[in-house]
Image (cartoon, rainbow, N blue to C red; front, side):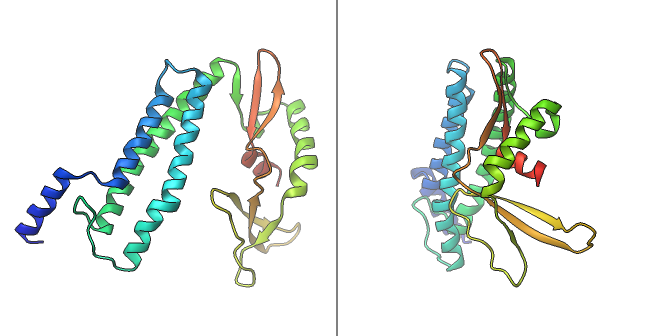
Length: 216
């Protein structure tokens, strides 16, 4: 890059704000609300959820657009003088910082929920009574809606809707050595969190994905 071009890009960067990086800054402000101890605890959890959902949509739309420009070798600059590749590099860098902060806030909120007798637990850590109850829920409400699909050259990869979730597993028939790669697309009709115990002073939840992995 010539000195003149470099100077021009620096001038543009000083005058304009990149819209992709600006959006990430906005989502960072949403995360600040999740950190704000003056907000009610449940509201902070909602803000964290909103930030995660926003980031999913950002990658589906805005980052996908950048990726398309890179694939098509578009060389036009953004208003602040960045190429699509440079924008993508900046977006990846800022997203890593955002995710690190998001994960830190998630851990903080889990601890604060626990102090308020609201626990998010793994199925393996449940007592015998709760495991039995969870197994009944799995058999009656979850298992009938699950359809494992093989992943191999003979089977097309299943369609996963936007913001959909899936679990990839290795399956093996009893007394057989052959291992099959499989994917289970999680139906959106199923609630993400399953309440396994509830009383006036205590609540206990497990994550649907963990339940499927535990019993399948």
